[in-house]
Amino acid sequence: MEKGLTLLQDCRDFLHSLKMRSKYALFLVFVVIVFVFIEKENKIISRVSDKLKQIPQALADANSTDPALVLAENASLLSLSELDSAFSQLQSRLRNLSLQLGVEPAVEAAGEEEEEEGKEEPPRPAVAGPRRHVLLMATTRTGSSFVGEFFNQQGNIFYLFEPLWHIERTVSFEPGGANAAGSALVYRDVLKQLFLCDLYVLEHFITPLPEDHLTEFMFRRGSSRSLCEDPVCTPFVKKVFEKYHCKNRRCGPLNVTLAAEACRRKEHMALKAVRIRQLEFLQPLAEDPRLDLRVIQLVRDPRAVLASRMVAFAGKYKTWKKWLDDEGQDGLREEEVQRLRGNCESIRLSAELGLRQPAWLRGRYMLVRYEDVARGPLQKAREMYRFAGIPLTPQVEDWIQKNTQAAHDGSGIYSTQKNSSEQFEKWRFSMPFKLAQVVQAACGPAMRLFGYKLARDAAALTNRSVSLLEERGTFWVT
Image (cartoon, rainbow, N blue to C red; front, side):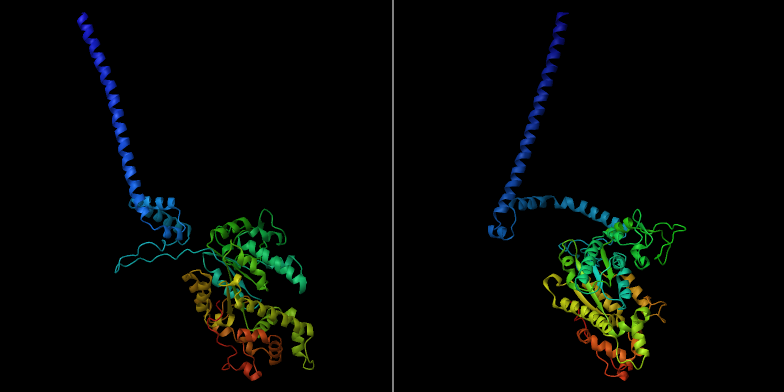
């Protein structure tokens, strides 16, 4: 019996000893594995260090490269092949997400390897560049509504039509002197906030004041596609009258918050303004690091502008019409001529500043004549988009083709549907020569700068074979 108990005790002692030895063995194996990994890491670091020592110090200094960054870059090369597959999957997911959101995906960086020769490369999406802020700077009746549609029709541009109209109706400034400068400063500051998609700034100038960021009085809302498409176009509300409603669909009152969010989602921002007269006031915008400003100044023959204004704003030009009808009256009142001269001079001075290309405006200014747009709308649209640094889409090209070759001009003085190649010279056959003489005398310097020829007599004014337009080509792109 005692022998059996002794044998049982010996077995227990043996098993306990075996367990202890197993633990020690596992511990020793773990220590060996750790030492092996440490040795491998030391060899890798040693090889990388040897490579770094071969790099000339002068090259490292010239590139201002931190050695720690170079080490990290070289060490990362060991796992690039493993990351390549995951990176390709990430690109594919981003591309699919961009398509779902309706945004053109960016192409791969220029440093990637090109496709093998002879291998047909599939079409690549347009390059997503920096956000541009385009200002179409014009005066009334220069064709700015028509040219503005070149940017309004592009889906990735948030376009506003004459938002400064509200400021002019709310803030009263007398023309000339300090008051004119004051109005320009107000326009400039509002313009900056709009380019930053802060549309709430307009609420202070809209009458009546919006409630809960909702307004029924946004000027010419229907001329801005971005304000009439989803999600800005909210469900229509019965018995709510919107003064400037959307053209192609019924929307509820404008939600300024939704409009501001839509502005931030768009790739670029553009707006048209006929109330910015002094180009020099835009310098703070051009120098603001948050903006990438592009100014397109649109001009037109002053004779054509006056002829158009006398039709569109007949009440303001009663004095001119009375002078034309009164054969015995020798001349116009001096203040009328001075107002005309002042308008032409402000346009000329702004254009001269832009063409001189001061440092703050270099590469940011383009002068366009309406007559050149009317004769070659698609060509000028491409030039403007190229200047702005924005790819032109087929949708804009299709709109231009459909709206510049119409058999008949669209109804209304603000229509953008015209046979543009014939429209721009119609004024020559309705303007009395004595009216043309007044304009030529008051606006001679501006006409010479922009390349508009003077008519010597009534016969030259109405003779289609006599061109009143000098060819200037792309001289205007600075």
